[in-house]
Length: 266
Image (tube, rainbow, N blue to C red; front, side):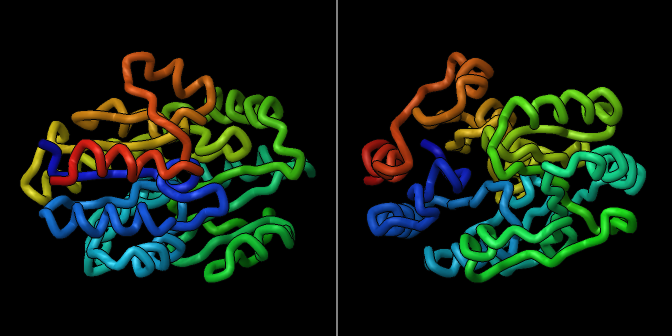
């Protein structure tokens, strides 16, 4: 039976208002006491996730920035892979020409943004952004760059996905975490490879892992894990990429916790 449980957060483990619901918290705590290891596997920043880990109340590894950072239970960095400076400068030079595009950067402990977005300050009450100059972007310590639009126009972001892949595809892993959030990491970064590194450190194999996700940034992890579960609300692209994977319910119904309770709790 599976020894490691890895889960994406938004759209997967968390409720639609981005909270850990009581049944989910109770289920994961019970699994922890039965010797199962839980891993957060998310595109979020590690500082953001550390707050959720504290709420959950169990020691857990954190795979963050889609695998560009991995922290152990003691909050020590055990893996990091930054975006190459020439990729950062090239992508920012391209994308800063689009006034509708909001450019975000996760750099070390910081979240940087090219323009104000009051809605994000309301959404993130414990971790928020600082502004940066697109003509002088940071080039060191960057875990990922990501892009959003106020109108959530997926097709416009797909155009940027194609442009970035055409120019930097060999040096970058470009993926959607949600249909309205396009993310860029180093080519060697994915949640799947980060999960493999954690499993090895704990003396397990990928076959000992069960994973849950809903985005294109979860595809490697859901493919590589011993069992990968796809959320019912996932974008059609995710289901098309994983036609053999079991599909479960909705995050609003705590489908991950119910699956774990039914299948793994003794």
